[in-house]
Image 1 (cartoon, rainbow, N blue to C red):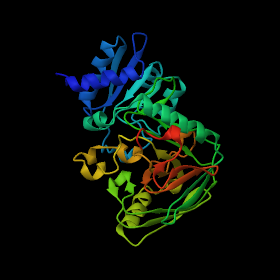
Image 2: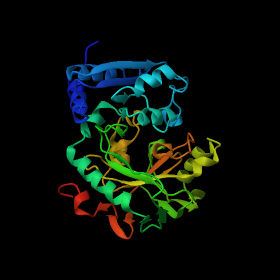
Image 3: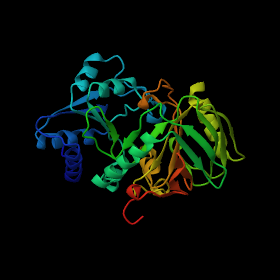
Image 4: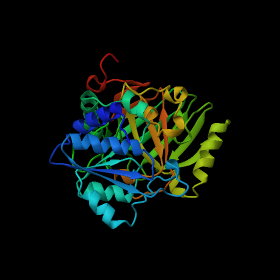
Length: 347
C-alpha cells in the first residue's frame, strides 16, 4: 500500500525530535488494523533515518473501546512481546498502553514510549516545538519544588493538594530520554497529590470539559473531596447525573480517588476544538487536555506516576478560568499563565 507523503514527512520529523538514528531500534506497537497507515508510515520514517524498525501487531480486543480499557493491555502475559519491546530504544504506541503495568515495565527497562493515537489533522495542527519543551520543563522545576498546590475559582472551587510523594509527569509531544513516556501531540504537566492529602471543593462550570464523554459541561457540577476521595457529586442538570453514572458503571470505589492535577501550556491547543471537530469520537481529547491555561482535574488511576490505583475508570476534567498557586506563588491566574518563563510568546 502507498504511504501518504505528508504523513511520512510528519512522522520522520517527529522521530527526529526524538533523536532517532542508525544506532536505535524503533518498535511500532499496533492492534488489528487500527492505524495501519500510521504503522506503515512510522516504519518507513524510521528506515529513512537509518534505525532498525519492526511492527508488533496484536489481535484486536473484543468489544474494543479505548475509554473503557484504561490500564488494560492485550500485552498482559505475553512475555516474548514485552521483552522485545523492553529491548527497543523507543516504542511508538498506536494502541494505548497508558496506565498499564506493561507500559511501566517497558519504561523501567529504559525504553521510551510515545503514544500516537490522535487523528492526523490533530497531529499536524499540534506538532510539537522545542519551545513547548523548554516551558514545560521550567514548569516542572517549579512543581517539583512545591509542597502544596491551591486551586480557586470565582465559582466556588477551593481545593488544596499536599505535594511531594509523587513525581511530575511532563508532556511536550516527543521524547529523547530513556525510560520516558510522552504523547504526540500534547503540552501540559501534572502530578498527584499525596495519598489522603487532597481536600476541598471543585466546581465545574459551563464550558468545562468531560473528556471521556467528549462533552462540554452545560450546568454546574460540584465535587466534595475529603482525604483524597470524592465523597459527593451534586448538580441539578444532566452533567452531574452523567458523571455519577459513568463512575458507578465501573463498580469500583477506587474510581472516586483523586488522580493527577496540573495545567495546560500549549498555545496550539484549542479549547473550542471539541465543538468544531468532526472526528471527536475518534479522539482522546488532547486539545482539551493541553489548551493554554486550563487546570486539569482528574479522577481514577495513578499508576502512571508510580501509585497502586489501577482502576479502569479515568476522568479528565479540564477547568477554565481557575487560579492555581504553588506554595502561594500564583502560576495560573483565572486561566492565564503568570510566570514569564512559562508563558508562550505573545500571550
